Image 1 (tube, rainbow, N blue to C red):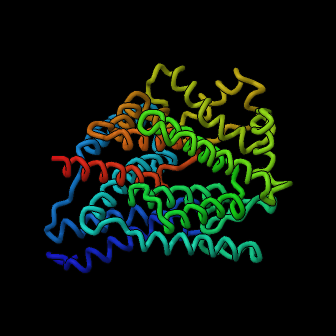
Image 2: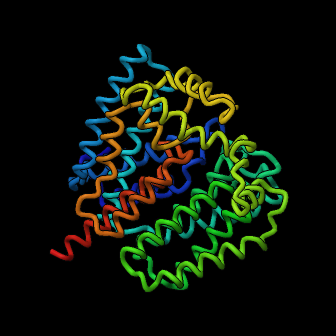
Length: 396
């Protein structure tokens, strides 16, 4: 790398980093999460440093790194071995820092990449449509872990991650435009919602939208109560419209019907839904059993199996060696160190009410089965902080 990187080269690497984060599953079909977003994050930050431009690192991230380092050392000492799971977990914690810092610096230099995001969302949707007719269209460059009775996967390993990407891509645009009511934003929301329900047919994404609606109602209660009746009416109309979607016979339809009828047996009978609930409950109870001490990177099968056995038959399925919850993986593996690192990452100091509610919503959504190497939620967190910093500087 040359002593002084040209500014055009730095911007180009920044653009490649953004593209790689919006195509986080594209690359080697042997594995779900790809190394390319982390690789290009490091290259972009290195280019900034070689270009003699100041690399901005938020204080919260420095504290996050310190507590994660203590937690990782404690976990390795507890495990008394370093395995593939150890390396993968540590790489995920490093990736969180790299994604946040790289996107934060990209925003500071070049602003929000709205055009790139629109293009990539369109590509995801088009690939999803093509997969209706050619299901294995992406098998040469994306790991596929789905079955014919589910929705299409597009550029993700399974339909759920397709829907999750669309949700976060839409949210990124809304945050960047301060939730402006415009034709462009409305169109993007409709495309992402339609893709989630009609193409991905993901039941988990319904939970995402439901939680988002509850947080939005809470925000209106605290900020604009006079808008609350209109918002609730709009949500009821959306729920009513869901009943007309051609989803009969799908898992998503079974989930919607069970929720509408107040029947929670879906979470016991459906293996995928049961495993997602267990990925929150079991590691949390294991964390309490360990008295908030680190559980390590290789001890979850033993701890989780013991907790699951005590709760039988609530969680009848086998325990995986990976915790399928963004939050609980950090909390269980690193213990109290992970909890403090998490609190520093979601630091709410100097946030306005909207920023606080956005962080709360993101924190709630990250209890779901999202891996640490998935960059888009961290981009959301960095954008929330960036927008609040700009607002604070404007007020000053």
